[in-house]
Image (cartoon, rainbow, N blue to C red; front, side):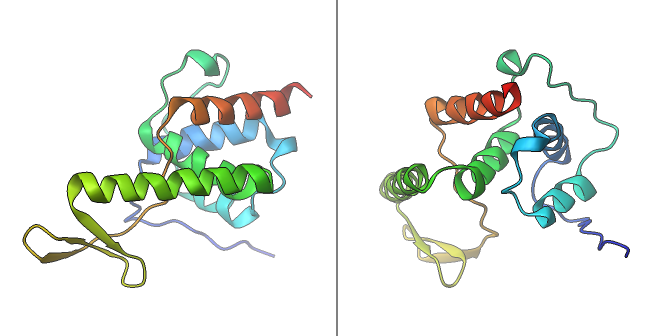
Length: 151
């Protein structure tokens, strides 16, 4: 049976970031069974095949922002424990509220758009998973993946 192609010419994230995510996940392949196959196909079908990324010295590599966001999303939704997931979702909510106050932006979940309340202009925006930007959470994810690899 032939598998479906998930290639998207208008993908909103960096193809190089998808390559980084793919290589990191391949390095820890035995321990990522919780990530649905469809996600792996989307990453593989849309990554930059010419970009070479090595996972040998992962702690000292500066990953792309999109890579961090995707890894955080995958960890939060598929690899974390229910307790960790609850905490991460609470942090995500706090960050949304903080961003709303700082930027005077309200977020309409059902319409999938951001509304700038300064001049009441509506602007349609494709929304991406919110990422916890704190270094300690990202570091925790990398350590988790490394620990899985060491087993």
